[in-house]
Image 1: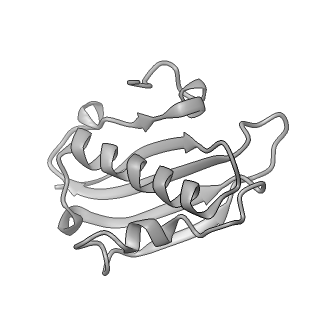
Image 2 (image 1 turned 90 degrees about the horizontal axis):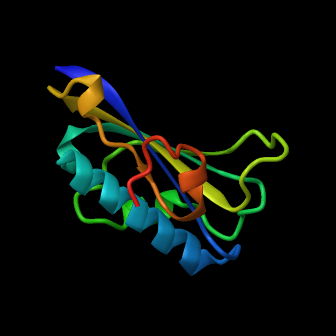
Length: 122
């Protein structure tokens, strides 16, 4: 068994609480589905946002999901390097798994597809 990191990123249109929470939940859902994981497999989740997003803690969207209440989650602000992608939420989900590194499916949604076009799915 290994600890693997699954990356995810998405963007929102506005610095709006509901939009941030919905985008975070959607991204996490895609990560879970693509990688066939359950909360019990999760070691921790690290969440960052760009400095232009301060209307909500994205971790709140994760904590509201059934079974995720005990998963350790940490939020932080992304390093403000210019020109970086605005209004971006990123996740690093650490999982316990038998999967090899090349079997991990990273998820990039909305404008965040530009961050990793080599692996963005939709």
